[in-house]
Length: 79
Image (cartoon, rainbow, N blue to C red; front, side, top):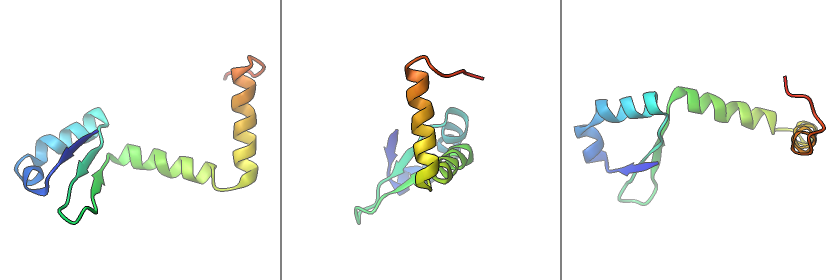
C-alpha cells in the first residue's frame, strides 16, 4: 500500500491507475484534513463487497468459520 498527495496523484494519474488496476495495489490519498481516501481497483471493491455480504449474518459467519476450522484440521474436502 502506498500513499500519495492529491497533487502527486494529479501529476501521475495514469501510472497510479495502472498500478492500482494491474497490480491490485491500494493507494492512500493523503489529505491535509487527515480524512484520507483510498483508491482500489474495481475487482478489489467487488471482493470486499462479497466478503461483507458473506459475513453479514451470524448464520453465514458461523458456517464459514466452521468450514475454515474443518479445513485447518484436515477434516474437510477442498473442491
